[in-house]
Image (cartoon, rainbow, N blue to C red):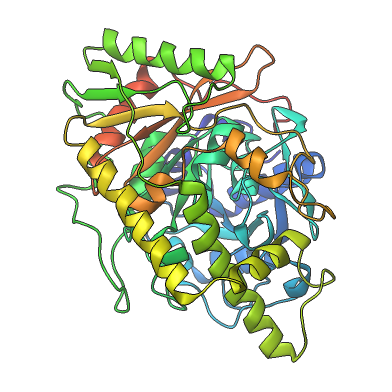
Length: 474
């Protein structure tokens, strides 16, 4: 290894070493590549490599951004001109982008060195990363388990210490789910905080937003400073922050009113170790001086039904566009069976049905806004059980009836905050007796990432996680 103490640093720490000429960007890239080659065969987190692009970035001269010289992975749903993006799909396995997405350009402008892309399920549809094209991304804590999804490659790569931070996106929990499964920090920003262009103004009806997963709270805050803000084509904008997000880290959060629940949003019992972890964190927060009470929002509609309709319609459009481009019907040689089933179900619905689901999402948003009038933070399990086993969700099964029950049991509480657009984060604060991570979810009011970053920094200080290393670790 070129740089012995690489994984003692977060991304800002590595950037500081580059800035002070203690290490070069080239040496950091060599280290990230060596680590990828050492552990990726066991976890399958990095599915597209473009080392030459990264070396060309360094040779041209990197922008003087806050992360200058730090190696980085883009999620394999996003594009950099001249590099391959597969979208986790057999149909697009050889696609080479003819332009760079806005968020990818902002990562580049921040000084990051883009050496590859991290695994995603096909079209980012599942909370586990096991595409037919690339195979399963395994959890570094236990390779019999999945890494979560859809940013499962990013979270696994960070957990295994290939790099300290990686791009992630979240349309129904896809930052928070793999962060919880892999024991890293992941914050989903407020709706429209980060750009979705240039190809569309919003993702999944406004549910989806991009950011990162990483090892430290300060990296997450500094990255949000670097990439947030509207573009010319943004259909709406997030509320402006009072100060840079990085200045919230270490700032006193004050005495917060925290409501918590240790059951699923459906009122069902959850894994006992997860429930115990939630109660333990609630007790710790009370000891830190916060006002903590057990209370959960009552939702006027089922988030799972809303997600199925909105995401299904977007999936159906992707399939239709592929059919128009190729002039033939799509088969399971092109897309996975689950993708085709979602598309077929959506095509049975009407435009009126879609608008009805938009209104249902708004009713959920309205109920959550009312709930947060009496609290600052809602604490809950990110996932209602530890990471799924590899193969537990089979998107190529002849019978897909197992999918909905698994989703309801595993991740019933994440998507409501995509519907409301509120910021929410998963913080790695507990582990099971068998050493699988347990992520704890915290959500705040619309536009209030500041409170989350303050609280996250307090939790990071009180119960640090960066010293914990998984079974598979570079």
